[in-house]
Image (cartoon, rainbow, N blue to C red; front, top):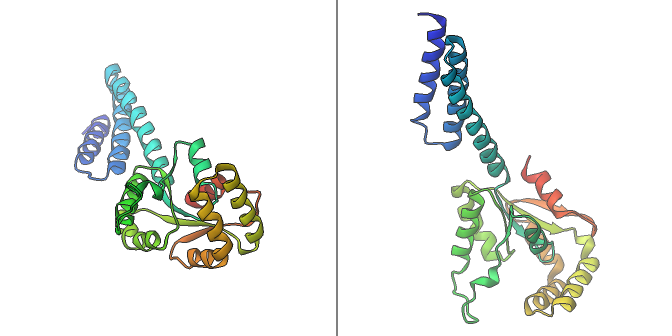
Length: 229
């Protein structure tokens, strides 16, 4: 067999193998390798249409691989303590979603098992490549412990250091004064009563904790430095 024919056969074999891949990322990578081999084959035999067409296919697969790996690297669920900046960051970047637990109230009532669909939605969005912020309720943390591993999603917690108590309570109080919302009032009073307990409970979760050590912090940088490891 001529070595040029061997390259053409190898390219065809790789592309055929890609057809049997259930993993979309492996499929794209095999298609990329097959396209590159086909470009080489087209150049060797002087077939302009072969190498141009497969060159375009190779570029398309390269872009899809980059986008897929980028989304996969970023996809995660973040259990965030009150006031860390979930809503602020989500409003700045489409890659972040603040999944409000208060949205699960209907006519002022929330079902006893509200946290189950809540966590399922968060995990589904994370699987699509988003970083999803969820509340730090105990039922939410417990539900994520049960289901996150099965969804193949990484879960992290974000909480301030215990030494930031006074500054954090001031921050929550100022937020309430600004918004006058009942939700922010409850968050402020809860921090006043249970700041240390809340922080300890979050850190005792089985998830990797991203700790905030200063009131002057960049939440996005803290998260990306951990999630993209």
